[in-house]
Amino acid sequence: IVDKWGYKTPIKLGMLLLILSPFLQTFFSETSPLWHILLAFLLFGIAWALVIGPVKIGVMDITPKNETGAAIGTLLTVE
View 1 (spheres, rainbow, N blue to C red):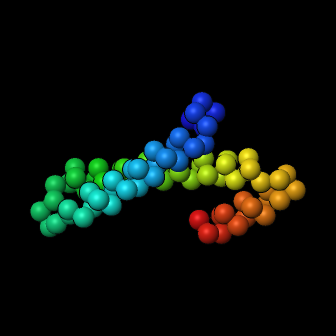
View 2 (view 1 turned 90 degrees about the vertical axis):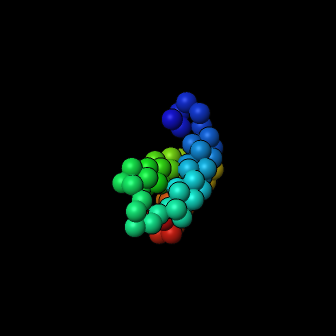
View 3 (view 1 turned 45 degrees about the vertical axis):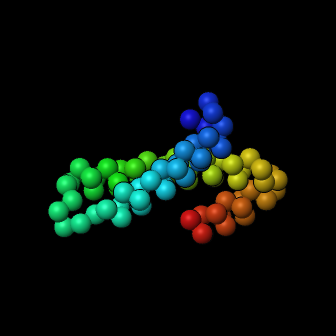
């Protein structure tokens, strides 16, 4: 995906899904259908996959080569 569209597009799409997923979760109740719960968490998982990989690639892309290891290490620490 990153090779085709760059890293900004999947991050933006993932962030939109990260907004939608918790919004759907606000409607959970004891009587929520299973599909509603699964949909909310599936969206969250897809969103996380769309964000975390391209963020790492973006960090490596914009960081000077001699600082890439420290940048990725810091990112993984706060991730």
